[in-house]
Image (tube, rainbow, N blue to C red):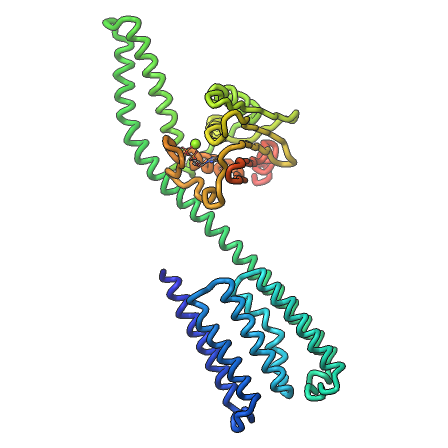
Length: 412
Ligand code: ADP
Ligand code: MG
């Protein structure tokens, strides 16, 4: 809200100054002012139209308004060129028309203005060169080639300017998104740590008592079997909590081991096959011949694959398979998880990784947040390609084990 206010204020100051300067130009030293002839009226009319559009822009700010401003500006500057043939500066204004669209950050408008303006100037120069009445434009005619070269140079500078600004904006946007993502992970991590910590203590107490009862001879064999089962389940819960706590401590010592991705996927797929069969979704594994090893923590890579394949199964339409592919690339291992399920829109993809974001009635919305964290921790990348109602492909890249080791060696 505040940024919008600052933008409006800045815009009105800038536009107001420009309009004031143009109005001064209309009256000051203008020989047509005293006569109030057609030249003066045309000049005043196009100036008023252009100023009006400029002042109206903050209220609409859409592509139509931007186009109208560009047309009004072109009409104004070309009118000046034709009305005041003895003034050299009008040619410069015409050359700079595409610069106006740089402010709008609209690629289509920029290139369209650039092309149309070039066409207009070419026709204008041809007219000046061949028309007899064009003696009026002596200044332009005297050095027509020079003017054309200067025009080309100015347009090249404008393209470079636009391109550099565009790249910088894009990079800034990506950076902003990255910051947002890491902020989300941080908040979720703190939350997870707090909750996990509070749950861990009662769990330890319960587990301790169960271990005591398990040793107690006053309980029969059946009860002891139940105790053992409970302890097993509590162990699993503790493990999950420990993994959860690892999110909140990303700086803690990372233990790297050689993890064979193919082996992990094989075991994960056997584990999840029965889960998929509930809705008749087979999991098809496509493992290449090459060895695919990465440097990571085995349990975490397993957790990553389980979360992603489970999501793929849950999104899949009944009877359609989930495809899991592993490929070794030059310096990376690529894992692809492909489903033919509900798919996601662009906005939904942007929300992935946000704690508690889930569209499932029984979802926790924590799975992907943990996945993003694991991928980041082992210097990998993850991205989602998805089409609504068609399906989703998750692509993960991890540096090859060999690569990572040699990089570490080089650093030493
Ligand atoms: P949960 O599975 O508990 O809902 P996740 O963090 O694993 O939490 O996923 C968050 C949300 O992302 C899901 O609720 C779902 O809407 C969406 N999602 C994740 N993977 C897929 C997929 N393969 N296809 C479609 N939607 C998906
Ligand atoms: Mg999930």
